[in-house]
Length: 167
Image 1 (cartoon, rainbow, N blue to C red):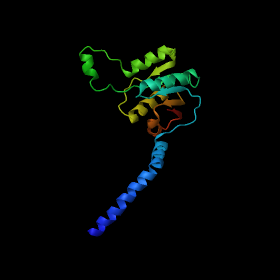
Image 2: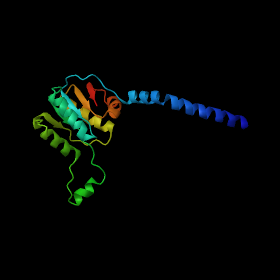
Image 3: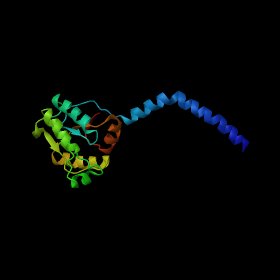
Image 4: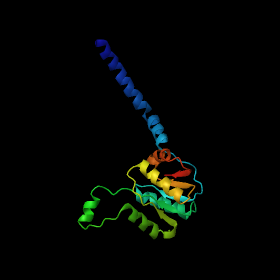
C-alpha cells in the first residue's frame, strides 16, 4: 500500500512536468489534426456549410469574386430551439439562410449564381448526405467547402467527394 502511494507521489509530479513542458507541442499536434486545408483550385461551385454563417458567407463571396467558382451553394440547417415559438408569437426572426442571401445580394452576387439546398441538416453527417445528393442532381463535380478551420477535418472526413477545403 505504501509502495503504491510512493509510486503515485513520483509519477504524478513527473506527468505534470511532462505536460507543462510538452503542452505547446501537444496543442500544435491537436491543431494540425483539426485543420485540413487543401490547395485552392478552381471548382464548379463554392459550398457554404452551416454554422458561423456570416464569416463563411463573406469568405464564399471573396472566393466567388476572385473567380474560383461560378456558383455558390448554401446548405440549410435545422431551426434553433425556440424558433417555432417565436413564429407562433408573430415574431419574425431571420433564419441563417435569410442573412446569407442578404449578404450575397449586398455584395452583388447575382441570384442566378446562388443554389440552395432545401433539406435541413441536423448534423455534419446529414449535411454531407444532403449535399452529396444535391451535387449529383446538379452535376457539380468539384467544390470548395467553406467551413471554420476547427471543423475542416470533420467535414473532409464526412464527405469523400472531390473538393478544396477553405477555412
